Length: 299
Image (tube, rainbow, N blue to C red):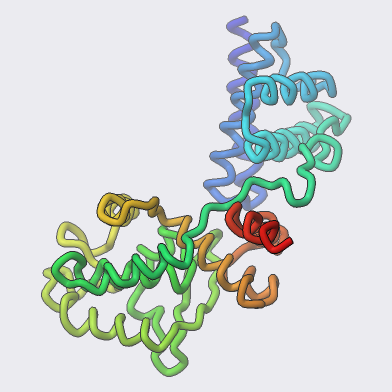
């Protein structure tokens, strides 16, 4: 068994190097490698010592194991993606000859309309939030700006923290965002959001000891706002307002509100920075449970 474990470790190391050589993003590599390690642990538990001897039965058995243990459909499908990459690596290195994992055959298909609903803010919650952050005795200018940027640009929290002053174009009122894989996109800014940015830069930001930082959003401890600080801020607002606030809920709300107002799916996809329009469709076509209830109520 010890020899088998050494083989598994060596194969996974080669797989990781193969992904690096093929220009796969670091986060994706981490995900693929973690999934393949989990698969190999499962095989080892079943007495399989040769992970390179990939068989169709191993994949279907592992998939059934995940389903029986109530893994989410999205999680299972992600693991299938990883196993297909592993299978292609084995073929590339001539460690196996047959492709036994295919996305079309192995991914769990979800019936249209039954996808997991995304959680979005109701219009009442949006208004409550907007009114609350106006109060300077409760919310600082910077935190007010963070809420508006999340709500009106749909940026990911990592993108929010990475905004530079140079990413703002006041002539065109646009924000240049660096997204996943270093890809850039431009997001138009509402005039009142531009005014809020300028006000923050002129006043509260000037009082920060890190005011010479290239980043827009500063903290007292460092020249760049951290993701966990944004989460802590939203957790504090959540306690005061009484409903859930987390970064991706703002992103879901941004996309869902645009779709409700008739903005084409392709445009929403570009604004959100999704690599594929299917991602936008999967998450936002059905928007929320509340939308479905309201639709049925019209009958």
